[in-house]
Structure formats: C-alpha cells, structure tokens
Amino acid sequence: MLIMSVLVSAFISCKKSGVETKNISSGIPYVAKGLSDTTSGGAVKGTMLQGKTYTIKRDLIVPKNDTLYLQSGVTVCISNNACIIIQGVLISMGTKDSNNYFTVCSLKKNFSIVPAVSDIAWNNGNGWWPGIQCDTSCTLCCIKWTHIEYTGAATAITEPFAGSKPAATNKGILFQNHLGDLIVEDSWIYGTIDDPIRISDGRISIMRNTFEKCGYSSNDCANAKGGTYGDMAYNLFVGSATNGTKASSKGAGIGENECQINMYNNTYVNGGFRTGADKGADIDFEQSAQGMAYNNLIVNCRVGLRVIGPTPNLAAIPNADTSNLSYSNNYFYGDSVSIVDQIYPVGYITKPGAYIIPVPATTNYVYNNASGGASSYDASGLAGRNNPLFVNFPLPEFQALYEINCVGNYNFRLQASSPAIGKGYTGFSALAVTKVPSKFPYSAVVSQPGSDIGCYQRNGTGNQH
Image (cartoon, rainbow, N blue to C red):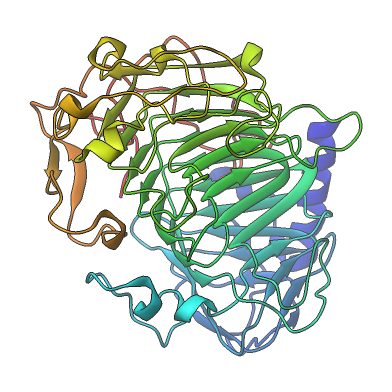
C-alpha cells in the first residue's frame, strides 16, 4: 500500500504539471507543458526546461499534489532572500554532463583560504537565501547531479512549512515526512549556515555527494533525526563545522521507530573546527539511534567516531542504541597529538574495534563502557603516521586545519600504494529503503559497500566528482 501511495502521488502530480508519465520509465519524460523562464516565484508546478535559467525573486511554493520537475542543465537563480517551499514533489534531474543549480548567480565561489568571517560563502553568518524547505506533505524530494549553494538565511515571516521560525537560520534541505522519500545523489552542497541536510523523519538515500564549507559556526551536514531510516554513503565532507553524518532519534513521535542509518565509505577531512569542544567532527550516533559505520576515512578531524554513552556524559545527551549499532574498518589519520589523542573521543564510549587503522594496540586507550566514557590517553606516537596517500592533498597540512574547507584543486582519491586500499568490509548491504520503483529515473541509485576505505574506489565506483 505504501508503494502505491507514493506512485499515486507522483503520477497525479506529474500529470497536473504537464509531464506525461507514460514515457517516464524510459528515463526521458515527455514535456507537454514547460515553465516559462520568466517564472519569478509564487505557486509553481510544471517542468523547468533543459538548459534554461530561471530567476526566483519571491518565495516559490510547490503546492500539495503538484510537482516541480527540473530537466538537466537548469539554473535557478535565487534573489531577494526567496525561499523554496515544497508541499508536493520536487525532482531535480541534473546529469553528470549537465548539472543543475540552485544558487545566487551573482556570487562567485571562493576556493582560496580565507577566514570564515570574510568568506563570501557565508555572508558573515547571514547566508544568502533560506534553502529548500519540504513540508510534512512532501512525498518526494529527489536531487540528482545538482549544486545547492549559499543557503541557511533567516526569513522575516513564518513561512508555510512545518517548523518555520522567523529570524532563525534555515536548513539547506529540510525533509520531514515519515512516509516520504528524500533522495540526494551525486550532488554538491556549498556554503551553508545551518545543516545542509536535515531529515526530521523519512526514508533516505544520501549517496556520492560533496559537502564544502558547511556550517558557519556549528551544525552537522547530513543530520538524521526522529525515525529517519536509510543510507549515507560515498559522500565527501571537507571542512564541515561539526559532524559530517549524524543519527539521533530525537524528536521521534509516539510509535515511530528509532533512527537507523548505515554510514559507510564516506571521506571526512578537517571536520569539527568551527564548533564547541563538546561537539563531534565526522560520525555521530546518539539518543537511541542505531545503524552501522564501516569503511569511512577520517582525516584531520577534531575527534574520531563518536558514540554517545549513558548519561551523564560529556555532552549530556541520551545514549545511542549500542545493542543495535556496529562499526569497524574505519581509518583515522591526524597531523598532531591533539587530534590523535581524540581518535576515541574522550568522554564517550566508542569501542576499540572502531578502526582497522590505527589498531587499538597503538594507543593506551581503555574502553570502560561506563557512564563517564573514555578517559584521557596517550597516542602521541601516531601523529603524522598512517598517511592514507591522497592523490593530491598535503599531509601534514600546511595551514591551520579549519582554513581548508573546500575541494578546490585537491584530489581526495587514493594513490595505488595507499594503505587504505582493500581494507574495507563488504559483509553487509545498504538498507536501500526508498520506495520509488527502479523503472523511474528519479529512483535511488544505491552503491553497495566498497572494499577500499573512503568515498573513492580504485575501480572507479563510488563518488564521481
């Protein structure tokens, strides 16, 4: 019944928008009626046509039971702090050769090293537009090969979506329907004030994306809460304020399941340096969340994989569901003593088997599984060791770690001689829970666990950026 309800919603909305569904299984939707590039906002349904640029000057709202469909090569220029609100369905079908954009077209990305307060990406902590806000009625938000840039600005009024708060920062993408699907694949998120992706509830596939300059002074990148269920895999996180991937059952409604997220084959670089000392930096499980974390590459992040233990703990957060949580074969590298002494974050209950590199015996970390979590330990001998050998990225780094927060000209693929190759664990499967049938081009394309650590695989699979 659930699959049928999703399909019925998609068929009705596409037909209303002028997109014939009879040919959609071929991957080439027929457009009966496209949107004019003079569209400036308001209630919108239909298809933004291939290669066109649309300028949005006021809030754009996709009504319930309607669809906004973007063909490839579409650029949506946002101005006047306009918000995109999805009460129905949003589908952005960029391609590898013809990306889509939601951006502020007057801005130019800055790949040089500058302090956050003077970086145009963040507009001095104000952001440039609120982002894509999906209401509780949104059944599908599918973002493929799409750039989403400069989000998180506050709105002046209460907007028509659940959780809107005037004068508060906004999420880059907000999704909150426990019977809906959020699919974000092969996309780029650049410059966010708040969480780039916040899922309050729903089924998710967050695969093969690149996150840069995410979080001005705090906030996580892919932040799953409530009863969210699904996969976060093959993503690259560079310079995130706090965690790259996070799972917490906080906010789950009565009768809802725990948050369950499989986090695997992600790469996290320089995370956690624009946030408080009680925050994470790459992977975080807390507040009854469960799932898996395997084959992740963590490089120069302020702390390592963080599992919240029984309260009271350092952050006074309820503990993760450790009986339904497994993790191993992750790889940690740190330039300095202060970083390697937090491979196992002090005050939390990350088990010694979290990493295949470094092996637990190279530290004097003691796992006590107590409410106080781990005590301080000495891993100073590991500083600068176990270089994962990126194709092009300096280790040890030549700048303060918080200053390198975007890909630029770096290449985070692994050299042929990297010690991270072949160290992955593949004895599990993706959850693959989204319900859009595979015959539709906007269904999830799920990458299963890879044998190489991190988001890039030597066989060419994984992250394609």
